[in-house]
Length: 249
Image 1 (cartoon, rainbow, N blue to C red):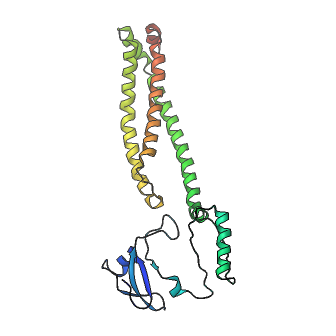
Image 2 (cartoon, rainbow, N blue to C red):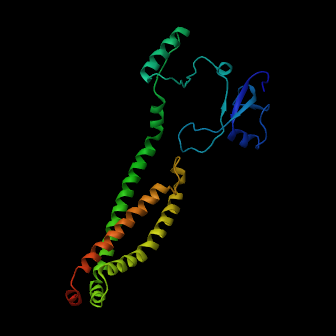
């Protein structure tokens, strides 16, 4: 739909906020003290300053209608060339079109993206380091606790073996006890972790708080630690003679 005079395209957030969700096509808008413009299109919301910003109203106006000398304009150019060659050719073309036009800076889009993500990247690396440290301390504590708990039952294992229990059955019994102890803790810990991560949803870009890779990795690591913590001392206890085990206090 093309109306007379100036025209503009708005995003969905602009239409939702200023037109109450009704069809904005053909409606008039006025930006600051500029001329009234007819809305001729609606586009999806986008990111303008950073990847974590909330949707905000935005409008697009034709360059030829709103151009004025002295304006600083930014252009995005898509090219199959490498950035250096693309910048050289772009400078040449602009000089041919208008020798008085100046180019302040030419840089790959990735540079701007990296700059916008720098603070978030530092925070993410710091949180990752703290997460690894927390996981290590949790694994160390879990191993120490379960290893001590199993070792304290050496006498019980000796009595069972003296009564005819097979070493494999004694070890299996200890592993079941380890599972009973760690299973609910891992389930509650995973649920609490996902809930707590939901509080930081506004800091996440294209990542879910319940990311299955992160949650699954933590649960798997702690499960392996629990299995080793229970199995290693249990196997050592089954290799002890029943007479020696019975003398253990």
